[in-house]
Image (cartoon, rainbow, N blue to C red; front, side, top):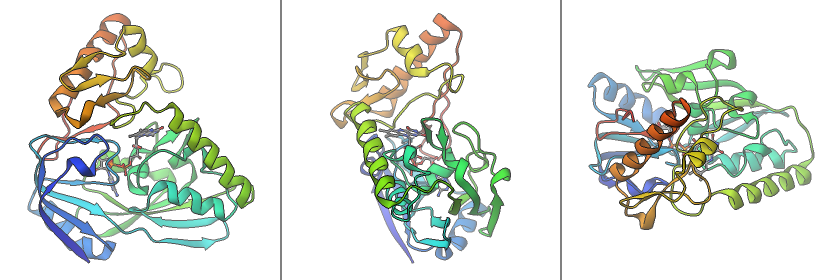
Length: 298
Ligand SMILES: Cc1cc2nc3c(=O)[nH]c(=O)nc-3n(C[C@H](O)[C@H](O)[C@H](O)COP(=O)(O)OP(=O)(O)OC[C@H]3O[C@@H](n4cnc5c(N)ncnc54)[C@H](O)[C@@H]3O)c2cc1C
């Protein structure tokens, strides 16, 4: 089943709260309904973008001149005692808690990070040395012809905030299968999740953002936040965009009034300063989208 909404404002659908209206928004309840329309969109070369929870996206103030796909399918199926398949539209947090209730603590360290399963797979979201792809067995996705295909974990190209799905915007993640191997019992696993979630949200700067703006230039060794802090970025403001006082790698949308341009101007300023000071090149972690679905390079 597909619900089509025309002229749909995107700002309320993203954490950043930036984005004008999309020409067409397709809310899709089951993946089979998507196959034909996905293939048609690609064949006609129409601008398209997939929207999960919108926690890692910075959309254009001009909106979107094409089709925005909103996967709403979120079924979960336990295939075996420790193997679970989950659809892309499922909220990551509720999926983690579901695995906890079955007694597994493998995904606890990824709790509290906003997003849906599809976004986690595509960006290989991670924290505390754990990445989504670590526990994946296989991923099912639609290809450019709308055909459902399967890729086993070693072929998914998982790396730091990377995957093959990220490299190919014509592939839509439909569902992923995870194999879990860290039993803890439901109560302990749920408690670990709750503790980590509380710890994480206490650290996140208050206000609207898309999470860490830049990737760490050398994962696990050189941290974007530290470089930005040392460059003096904290608190700097352009228009209604501000580098958080609490965490220099978070650029905030003040009062919900920042434009995409405010945020990009501020990001470019501090990317250039870090380059001049240290020689490190900062690349955005956030997907910065123009009104035709193309990535805007900083
Ligand atoms: C406060 C805050 C803290 C954060 N902390 C972390 C952190 O600690 N670690 C971390 O890794 N990330 C972090 N993030 C970033 C974000 O939570 C992750 O990137 C998350 O995985 C994004 O999921 P989403 O559903 O919101 O994706 P969206 O933001 O909706 O989309 C992100 C990208 O994925 C694509 N996409 C979405 N669904 C699909 C699909 N089904 N198939 C193919 N492509 C798809 C979109 O087109 C887009 O290009 C944080 C964000 C915020 C706001």
